[in-house]
Length: 70
Image (cartoon, rainbow, N blue to C red; front, side):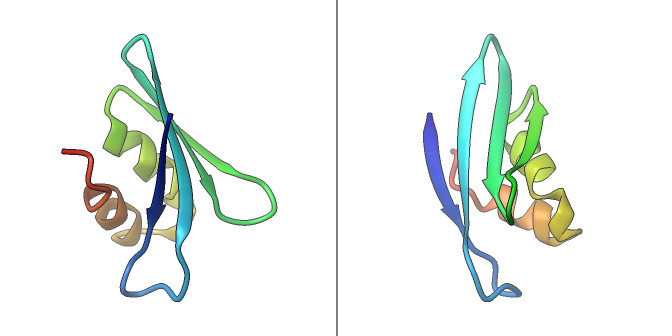
C-alpha cells in the first residue's frame, strides 16, 4: 500500500490517499470528508482521479497526474 498526501494550488488543504494494487487493478481511497471516496481502475492515476472526482475537473485530473507515480 502506498500513502500519498496530495495538494493543489486551488485548494487550502491536502488530501490523504491510500493506493493499492491487486491483480492488475488499482484501488484508491481518498479521505475527503466524513466517509472516504473510492476509485478503481486498471491504471493507478485513473483510480486516484476517480477517488478525487467529487473535487471536480480539472482539479481531480491535475492532482492524479501530479501524484509522483513515475
